[in-house]
Each structure stands twice: as C-alpha cells, then as structure tokens.
Length: 398
Image 1 (tube, one colour):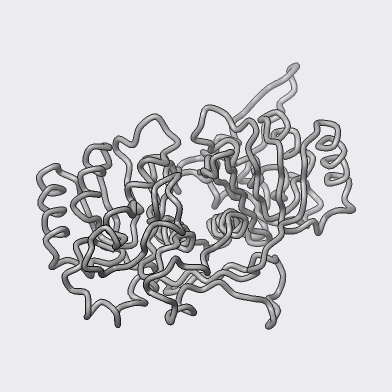
Image 2 (image 1 turned 30 degrees about the vertical axis):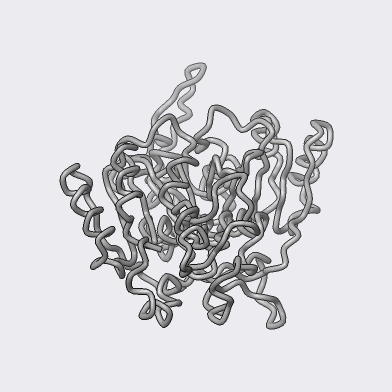
C-alpha cells in the first residue's frame, strides 16, 4: 500500500533534479526528521485477519459468523466475504436451523461460506497467486473453489473441525494442489475501534459478537453490523496500519453493489522510506514536516482501487477530506462522502474542499451510526463452543 515494501530501499523523493540551471535538489539526510514514525501500527497479518473477523460481524448466521479476506502480492485486498444466504434468497424465509429431521429445513443446504463469497466478490481480473485469510479452516467445498481460483496460500485462525471428513478432504486436496496453509494467531486478542474519533463515552453502545451468546440458535441473527457501521469500521481498522504518530486516518470506497473496491490509510508514498521521512508537524522548515510528503487516506484508497474505476462510488472516511483530496475525489467520479469527523471544518483547506465538492455536485454527510465502538474479538470464532459438543456430526465447517 502506501509505504515501501523494503525498509532498506532509498527514498525516491531524494533524487536530484535541475530546472533552469538551478540545483533544486535536497539531501534528505541533512534535514531533521524530528518526530519518528509510529511503531505500534497493526502488522499485515493482524490487519488482514481482523478484516476477516470484522466482515464476519455482517453475517446473519446465529451460530457461526465467519469472514474471509483475499489479498494479492501487493498487499491489496481484492475480495471480502462472510457466510450468508445467496443473493436474492430471503434471510427471513430460508432456515437457519442446524438440526432437523428434514434436511431442507437446515441452513446447510443453502448457506454460502465466507471463502466462496470472498472469491465471488473479487474486484480484480483473477485471484491467481493470492492469499486468503479466514477465521475457520476451509471445508472441502471451499477448498475446491480456492484451488480453482488459483489462490496459493490459506491463512486460518481456527482448525476446530480438523477431525471432520470435510476438513480432512480439504487438506488432502490443498496438499495435492500445492496450496500452502498455515495457522495464525494475531498478536492481540482484541481490537477496539472507536468510530467517534474521541474518547469513548461509557453510555455509547458497543458491537461485540460475544455479548450475544444467548441468542436463538435457530433464527436469523439480529445484532449484525449495518452496512454503514461495517464500512466505517473498515476505514477505522485500516487507520491502525498508519505509521503517522499524530493522526491515523483510514478510508474505504464502496460501489453500488455494496462491494469494497478500495481501501487506504495515510502514509508516505511508495518507495519513500518511512524511517528517513519526517513525521513531525511543527518545524519552521516545511521540508522537515510530514505535510510535504504524506499521502492522505482518501487518495490512497482511490489509488489502491481494484476496479476499472470508482465512478458513482461512496467514500467512507474518518476525517473530512482536504482540498487536495477533494480534487482527486472529484476527478475519480466518487459521488458521495460519508465522514466520521469534521474537526478541521474552519480551516481553509476544508472550506475550499467543500466549495469544490458543492460545485461538482458531490454529496457529503456525517455518518449515522448506532454503534460507536466495535470490538473485534478473535476468540469469537469459538464463542459457541458450548453448543459444539452436541453437534459433533454437523456436515459442514460452520
């Protein structure tokens, strides 16, 4: 994404240029870097697994919520999915039961697994060489799709169904097809997202799957994230990847089919070494501040897009876009902006941004969220373990 992939590469920004015989070069080594980059940013594996678990919070399955996230070689997310009924099939009419004398009255005949949906929701030409992050080890049916899609690695959190024939068959096929798989445990057990960009109020509601452990196991889950909560949470989760020590901002672009087609966070341009660039904001020398170099989240989300264009899309972003971001947003064809904070509303850059957006006919509004804090708990995949002892013969990986 924004930052360079090699910590030892030299910054391209430091190359020498000449104009009209005047040497305009700047030796970055002679500048004071000042404040250094943030070091507690979210690691890639944690981030991608968190995207999978966050996506699972959209699932309406009352007993198992599973998410999947597909990533290409450039560390760009190219497909996201969670378990649920097929498109056009009513969640209210199809059964969610795990057990019935009539197999047509169980969910297993109908539910699409997270891996299937992530593959079918891809926003790139193909998934060859990609990696899929998933909460549960894929069943045999999902393994077929993973192999046929050209995915080369599976990173899973839980293998709690490892003794089931569906999982054994899955591993047999993955091994024969040369698809690598590994178990990964994130470096932290929980990630808390504060969607209000302020200190959490005690009275504010929290979305946490584990809070609903007493829900009806045979009826559609009611406490799933709304679309707006989900997309805004995705923006805030992505902000945790930022190395900016002062402000971490994320952005998420969504098309008319509710598919995420671009994600970004604020950071240095590709090829510019994070360790050699300034991150401060108070030096009297503009070249020693981050402002001359940092790419904003909205711009990175657009530049990281995995679709032919983002015309007509909606941008979810933590902070209202500045004037420079507004230019890119307008030229990209984005039609709606939903933001969490407009704290810089009196600054000239924001006033100019709104003027241009208004003239271009782009709608913008503050988010309208019922949840202001979302907890991604990696242990939720086993939250219903007390029910599993009674269902050892379930014919699925859910």
